[in-house]
Amino acid sequence: MKKPLYIFSSGRLERRENTLSLETQEGRKVIPINSVSEIKVFGELDINKRALEFLTRNQIPVHFFNHYGYYIGSFYPREALNSGFIILKQAEHYLDREKRMYLAKGFVAGAVNNILKNLEYYRRKGKDLKETISSIEEKFKAVSSVDSIAELMQVEGEIRKTYYESFNLIIQVEGFYFDKRTKRPPENPINALISFGNSLLYTTVLSEIYRTHLDPRIGYLHETNQRSFSLNLDISEVFKPVIVDRVIFSLLNKGQMQLKHFDSDVGFSYLNDKGRSIFVKEFEDKLNTTIKHRNLGNVSYRRLMRIECYKLYKHFMDEEIYKPFVGEW
Image (tube, rainbow, N blue to C red; front, side, top):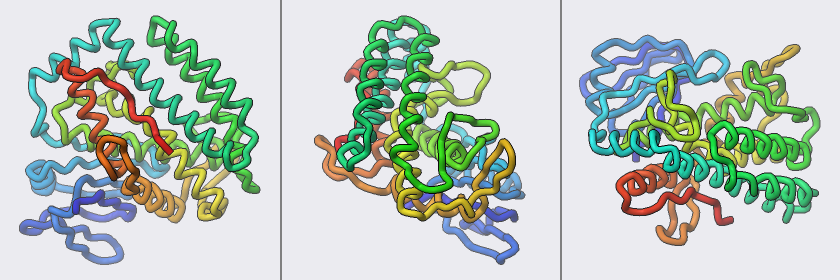
């Protein structure tokens, strides 16, 4: 079974016959190419043209993150499955205002419904979230009547603000307090966890898109502009509450993630190497967790992301109207 390769140490990645060879201070490690689905690089990595050609031939994307865990870019191999026809269909749905709004609202609806699922789950566990749930449900009603992406993003932002305010009820761990969402830099450990988790999710979804006929450069909720990719950001909105937020809640409430796993100072906070390692393990475990799907039986969250891509493909081909994934727990 193929799985992501995470590289935290600095070193050199090269091709050795028909395998990958990773050399770091810890020594040399041989990695069978058929065991790797994607590569995520956090350390300083030297890689040559021969290795990149080998990765391209085996359709393996490489995602790069900076010292603080921020996503900075990808080596996106030549598309093996893209077709001109589906790109035209994607562009058609972007350029047609009504069609674009339908998809953008769909991504927001998926995100909000999964947020509500999270809140309802913790309400059943005794957390005082009834008022938060009611507030989000009321704000969500505005989505159906907005007629611009800017208005839609504003409503979505207000809902997320209300949602984030509930984190202090869900996470009642000493030393972890969440007052507001800050990104560059994240101002406290919970913001650092959200930023790191979202970066991992964006690249995971991007890798799943790569294995379909879709073009990741054409998004609908997130503007298709100078950024390289935007469709992965759209799809990620649906899965953030299900994967990133649930991982954060679990790690903190179970005491697996502690303040010692962060480097902090006035105005910023970042996960250290140990913290990233802990988060990545929990993140991958979550992606590989299977749930019972009403139509597909047992399916992993990673597979659900690929299925979300196929649902969009069918939508573009006028085979089936897109409806976002919503958790059923």
